[in-house]
Image (tube, rainbow, N blue to C red):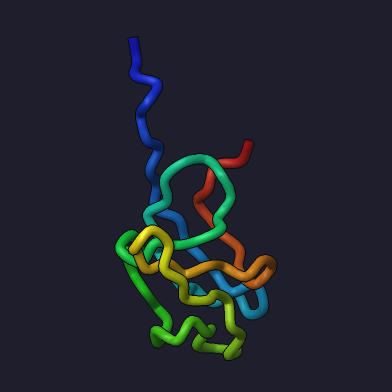
Length: 87
């Protein structure tokens, strides 16, 4: 019998909603929506590290620390993802 505690991890692409520029390649776990990005799970970062789109300059996230881990909290409507499974 398969384990129910199996973690579904996939690499997703995170794009700017304004100009469609690729921002991150991120290792996402679970089936929920993208609310925050743990910094250690970012596979490829195509930004300058200032949480702004390199093309249009739009701020897409804010820096936070959750449970002692650095996190980028995504601002709703500023990004879209590719590679996520839909419910």
